[in-house]
Image (cartoon, rainbow, N blue to C red):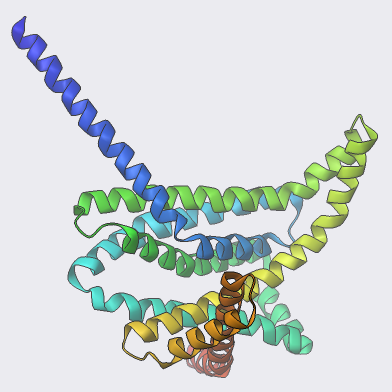
Amino acid sequence: MSGLIALLDDVAAIAKVASASVDDVVGQAVKASSKTAGAVIDDAAVSPKYVHGFKPERELPIVWKITKGSLFNKLVILLPAALLLSIFAPWLISPLLMLGGAYLAFEGAEKVWHVISPSHHDQATAIEEKAAGKDMEDSKVSGAIKTDFILSAEIMTIVLSAVPAEETIVMKAAILAVAALIITVGVYGVVALIVKADDLGLAMANKGSLGLTRSVGRFIVRAMPVLMDVLIVVGTAAMIWVGGSILVHGMHELGYHLPQEIIEHAAESAAHIVSQFQGAVEWTVTALLDGVVGLTVGAILIPVVTGVMRLLGKKAH
């Protein structure tokens, strides 16, 4: 009997340690996730544009496909890669992130070019639709997952940097995994609500028992197309801004400090001019200048990438 009691005491002690470890993992994951707010907002703003133009019954399935792709990106590819890089090649993290930042800048700048040159946009869209055919949905999902990969890489790197260095590799992996789940469910849960809000508004407008309910429903239906267009603009701006921010920070990490110093000096000078809201002004100026860097790099990459794609196309033929 005394042996059984001792065994139960040991089990209870192990359970307490495990419970404390779980609480620690969740707590650190939530704390680290909060530092990724900028990238998370960008991810949520970028994603709704990938379901724009599809039939309502395909919207949630598309969001679910992107969600699964995002979880695969974070848990299967980026989590082990981040841990291995942090152990064996931490110097590679900044260059790889800069490649991702350049890709985001290129994609955002290309969308701006499509707006500036509608004929080019129409031609590119026609080629894309002809090439994709019935696989247009898969093409859009693939593009969304590729963009998510870059944003997820930034998110996972930020989370990893927020984890105390003295934590064991197992704890780091657990914190990264929990943070990935929290962020992914949060982002794509919001995306699902955004893309289905018009259906909710339509149901309220048609079936609402109160006049106020029907009026709110009609307002939602009218507002959602505008909101979707705004999100497309915000998503494009976010890609340019985040891409530029990654490039500037990466250059700073690699020893080229001038771009970041110029941006910081300009932001601080602008903030001193305004006595109120100095923090908001400094953040806004920093974001705008990061965006200028992203747009410039993206614009330079457009002819480069286009030329490479044409060359590859000729070789394929």
